[in-house]
Image 1: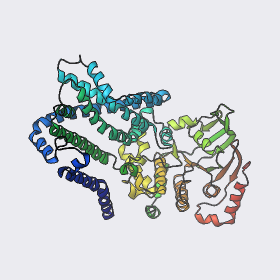
Image 2: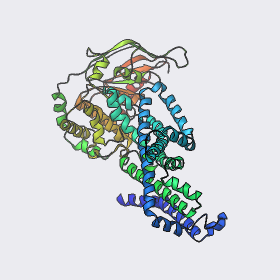
Image 3: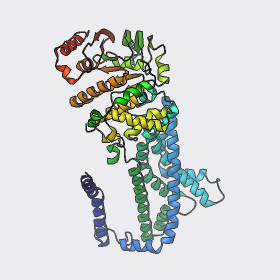
Length: 275
Length: 280
């Protein structure tokens, strides 16, 4: 039986890991041999060669890590705050079902406001929060990410609390379970897969909104801000180095999420595994 | 069905002692002039789900509510379980209201689907209601073991629901309902989603469990043959509005096996029940 399982995993790995890796390798080869430049009609100044980009990353590791730290603090801070707030909103909506679902529709309207619009407004609103420009900027940036992450979590948490298997509420009632018991024994565990659905949206969104909010921040730090600064200065190779780093942050955080999901949802119905 | 072997081979003698040791006395349910109406969603006349139902259920009796869709059989079961409130009339369970009995956690309910929690193993699913009742862990563990042996799933305790077949999941549901030592076992079309082979196996299982535990069982089904095989009495419900159109005594000898279905007496009783429906 183990052998069968092993074969299955190997087949999955080919499609889900090997093919994307091969595709990436082909792009890098086309890029390094400048065939990509010919296709796109550009030159190595605007689109530096991969080896040059990686040399820059290696040479500037100290500065890059400082910016990575600033970006990761903002995106993870906002992700945690936003997800916690979203989960709480989901709970409130569940507790007051009459207007709860409608209320969440209003909350989701926030998602329609572009980050580019929210970021400068929040910069302005938080300008008196601290004497220190770095702290002020961190607060503003984290708030942008928080808003971005709240909506996905609130809607998914609400669904997780309310989309129960048929009769599972009746079962609890038949044992005279009170609301708190129903919440902790049924609704919270039921919401876990929905939390991961939200996080699959929120983790990439938190990094994107952190990068964009850095563009507008008062204090110059962060991977996103470095991309902008270096493009303004026409230092495309350095800008590309930060773009690669930004991608790496996104991939690493998403892999951590998938790993956590794999452990925590290991024993759920197969549909949660196969997503 | 791998787990079934254990059950047939094992010694079930402890069950009699175990169940009687709790000092349970049988239940007695009196339903008087029970009517239930549901408001019409479009503002029209209310839908009459049940009209003027009168029924006496004896302690330790296996009683089946049988009828087509819309006859109110599930509504009647839910009313006994206090999951539905009567519009008029009353349900009295040994001098108490259904709510009091529910609060005392004396009902074991098996639903149309097993309602197992995906995040709990089989053992922890069976354990769940006992956790709510605050039964000590040691006692819980002992009871779970006994109940899983009873339904022939002892070897599957550490599995998760999605690793079991539909029939096995439903047996976990039955074990969970029995684990709290209910006085009344309510079963709402528990086998309707199962294939014929699994269903027959579970019929035999249920008859064995009932003979061991002596619970009062109220069983809802739309399958006449199932009703006759299992019950002491079959309550025939007819639709529009839902009402009791007949109560058929099933005087087949016990213990019953599947072979009883081939007898003339069985078939005569099936015909008698079938001919009792009105307006179908």
